[in-house]
Length: 356
Ligand SMILES: N[C@@H](CCC(=O)N[C@@H](CS)C(=O)NCC(=O)O)C(=O)O
Image (tube, rainbow, N blue to C red; front, side):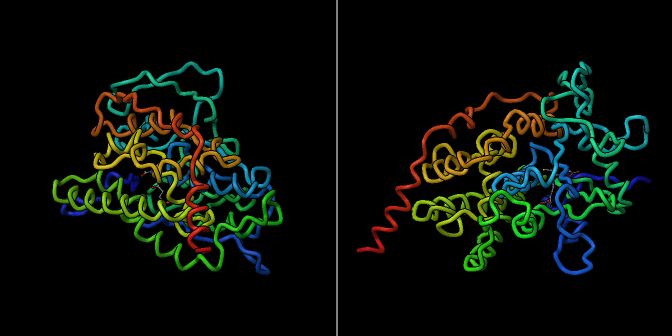
């Protein structure tokens, strides 16, 4: 029997969602004889524009200016059968986009909704080797876990996966590729903030990054109540911090912001509706909204944001949550991010306090 499974199957007995750890955890290293040394053009990122974990890697690549050193491929936003010719194998997951010019369409995985185009701008076939689905990349690397997630940091030379853990890939992109980066001086993991970063990352991961999934995938009222209570408390805690401090771990942008921003970006358009996170809204929380605006307006960031693909992914990929895959119109959150932000005020009021 195939081991293939998705996050939707990672449930505790009490109806709570329990995400499994990523399986591929190697590191890029400068050390002599390292298995994966930093090299320009050697590594490739397979991502989904829709996926918040994958967006972390695109954000770090953009802010560091690593576009020429590390290539990327964006997969199609809607999960589909990865072995459509095998009746026994029901796995659904990420597939590559059809080439430009294709007018093929498809319906959701229970044959409803759509029609959705197989080609979408920005989503291409795998440029490195013949494959239809992200699952094929894992199988090429002889994966035995059976969970086919993005992002993937792929080594073109050894033809294997270096890492499929976004939290670690962004550390590598920040620290290991400076000789090829356009912004080598930008350190997103400064020594003096490491402790604070680790502390905020822990509660933000449990209650917000993964917290939205714990709300959305809960299959018992009790599990949902626990998740939504923790999420609401953390949302308020983030707001309180950002009322006084420019970024989540201090006065400068760090990997902790890169981890938080993709969750906030999806909150009003997707999580409030789809994952029932409707106790709070980013657009009604000025400190968080302006924080998102500031990050969105940094050079390169907008290019990592594709709200159409984000919405399409969630609303069309899990038919048991949205049978007909209807995509709600929403508040046009990306447009709200275009307005000027007021984050200088936070920095100025802090400076004033120090001077007083
Ligand atoms: N811990 C991983 C999580 C990645 C992850 O769960 N990605 C989702 C997309 S949002 C995925 O690819 N899911 C496929 C599946 O569950 O089968 C990371 O942060 O990199």
